Structures are given as C-alpha cells and as structure tokens.
Image (cartoon, rainbow, N blue to C red; front, side):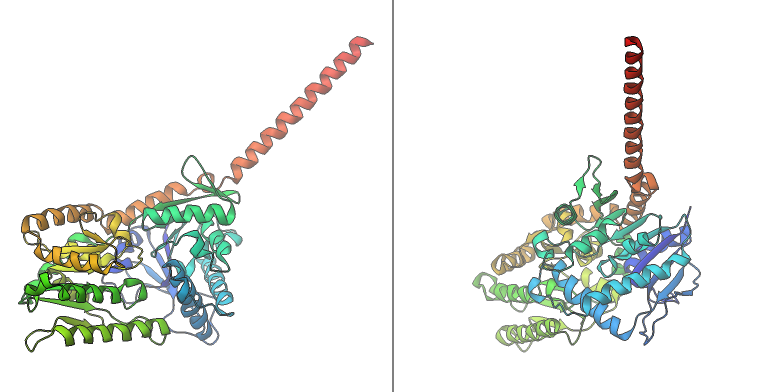
Length: 492
C-alpha cells in the first residue's frame, strides 16, 4: 500500500502543537497508517521563493513546505483565492474583486506546487488535494505525466453555473476540477451544481456508472459530508462544562468566523426582533445571546464593514433593551480555545447557526455533540448550510427571513424537554455514526476504487474500440477483396 500525500494551502505545525481539531485530526490516522506526507505553504513568505519543498520529519507523518513570495501571498491567496473564488463560491458576485495580477499568480503558484511535488512522488502514492486555493494542482500534475490517483475535496459550497460564470476563467477552473479522479463535495446540492457546470463548461457527459466523461477521461463527483470526532468532542464538552458553572439565564450561542457568508447581521436583527415582540417580553432578563466572531481578514473592506455593522447592532440592542443587571447580547471579537467553546455549547439552550450559504458548518455538529442528552439544547440551522441535509431534526430556517428566525428563537426557548430530547437524539445518532473517521475512510475507499488507469481514464477503452474498428474494417476489406478475386476467377 502506498503513501497518502495531502496537499493544502496550510500544513499542520511542524512540532504537532497545533493539531487539536480540524482536518489534521481527521487525516492523522490515515497518514500514520499509510506513511504520509502533508504539503502546505510555509508560514513565512520569501522574496525569491524556492522551487523545492522543505521536508520536516515528525513521528507520525512528514510535513513539507512550499514557498511563496510576498507578492504571491497578496495576489494568489488574498487576491484570487479569497477576493475572487471565496465570494463567488458563496454566491456573492457583488463582492468579487478582480485585479489583473490575481489570476496569473493563482495559476503560477499552483503550477509551482505541482512541480515541487513530482520529485517526492512514488508510483503507488495516493494524492489528496484540499480546497479552492489549489484547484489546478491535478491538471498541472497530469501535464507532468503523473498517473497516480488524485482526489480533491472542496470544503466550501459550489455555486450555480450562472454565478460561477462571473469568473473569467470559469471554464479553465472546471477543467482543473475534471483532472481529478474523485471530487468530493459537502452536500448533494453541490454535486448537482458541479455536474451542471461540467456539462455546460466543457461538454462533460454523465455516464451510466455515475462518472462524468470529459476530454477522454472520467471524473467522479460525489458528496462526502465532513464531520467531527463526535464522541471525543462530547467528552471534551463534559470536562469543560464541569469546570464552569452554568449561566443564570438561558443562553443563545453563535460561533462563527467574522465573514459575510455567515449571516451575522441578519442573526443580530432576528434576536432584536425576538426581544421586540410583545409575546416574548417575559424573556427579558432571562435570556442572553453570546456571539463569538473572531476576525479573519483585517484590512479587507467587506470584512471591516461587517465588523462595524455588528458592533453597531450590538450597541443598539443593548442600548434599547439592556438594564443595569442584564446585557441582552455579548459580542466577542476574538477566538476562544476549542475546549472553552465546547463547555459553552453544553451550557447553552439554543445554538444559532444561520449562514447565508455554507459548505457544511461544523459548529452545528459540535453543538449537537456537546449537549447533555438528558437536557439538550436546540439547534436553529440555516437551510443553506450543508449540515441541513443531515440534521433534519434541527429547526431549519431561512436566514434572510428575520421574522421566521425570531419566531424560531421563541420556539426553541419554549420547547418541551421531551421534544428537545427526541430531536437531539436523532441528530446525535447521525453524527455519532457518520463521524470524522467514517468521512476519511469513505472518501479514501472511493478514491481507491476510482484509481487505477482503467478506472481513472477512458482513453484505453477508446483506443481498444478504435483498434477493434480498424481490425473489423481491415477484415471486411480483405473479405471483399477475396470475394472479388474469387468472383473474377470464376468468370475467367
């Protein structure tokens, strides 16, 4: 069995100190078992980046860094990846910022990553590329003659074809995705969108086996909803909650990166509307909304705008409804340790997970995992999060509908214990079965089944058919010539 080669924009820490949670935990077992190598960008930038990988050896798996320049950091990462692809893939064409230098930097960095990887590859290695920053890697590797199985997982949602067409290189991006053997997506809606994109952009054909035939090869597209270490997170939440007393009021909680895709202003407005309604007056002084929203990209106008908007909304809500003894909303604009968050989830009555458009949103699954099964809280979940396809027992809402979201807050707070337990049990059982280990295993098994030259490419089959046709044509010609010869001889 060959090694697993993971390629992402960011690599795990060289000393393993930053491995608590996330994708590293998901893949560590497979990397250890298969003898892995994880490749990502060096945290530093360089004036003249090297074309070679810098390899660091860890006890569990190796880390390799590729280098990028200061300019490429601005144009490839902050530019094309996060000012073009991120808003487009989240359906925000209005926030796309395209500058001339962005696109060349994106393709240049991806080409350099592929070229630096080739010398480290072995014939039986399996390559797994992660996320939107590195879409072209497989196509560049194919150009260099790499035949290994190459998989891709997109952690963000896939937009509809009309939205993606706003990107000038939308067809080139699609061809990049079609160079993989298996493209894993978060939700069924993403699979549907990408199939439509492939058909319209590059004339791909959907085959009876479910694969897409495009440019002489096959690519498989499927949903693999990412998950968490469900049982491990539950234990963490139990420990953390035991060390912190429960709040003296019903807590609503939201935990999101400060991003325009998360629907934070709409969430604040829904909470304000909840407080405003006469039938909810009895909750004044008995409920508090805690929103944790650590910063993401300071200095980018769209992110600065939403930060100012949230600060203004929090001030308005507290000013209108707060008292000397009660602050209706707590807004924390910095990250909190994961274990502390786990304890906060367990002590919360309601979670507000209401993105406008999201790939999965693991906060929803973390909240479910953290709950006390005898007295669980209620998950309010956006219908536009990938998690909504799995956690159907949550209160599903349209985050644009402020009135519906406000009413859902009231419904969650007033929900009976029996109903809360029933809903929570359905959600927990699902994420306990479909945890992060199952996600990794299922994806890699499917990639292995998609690998191998006969499965990965239809070129061999086409060549075989052409050879058969040539042989049949040649045989028919020889038969006709022989028949003609016999006929001529008989006449003579």
